[in-house]
Image 1 (tube, one colour):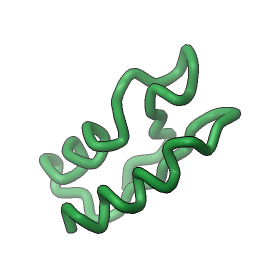
Image 2 (tube, one colour):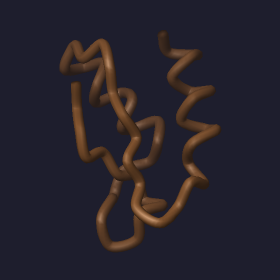
Image 3 (cartoon, one colour):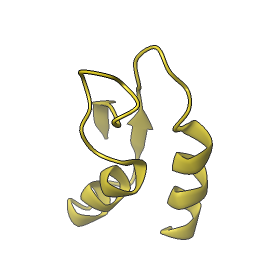
Image 4 (cartoon, one colour):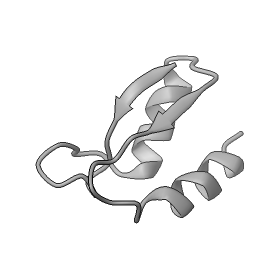
Length: 55
């Protein structure tokens, strides 16, 4: 499981989009991933919907 995963919604901490983060987990054969954006929850709903699509 990848921990400490930030999207670009975590200003100064993340550089990936939600979809890029999910694709990276799939490429590395991870079955679980946790979105841990800092001071922001804007990516949460899109992250969940994209993860369900790519399941």
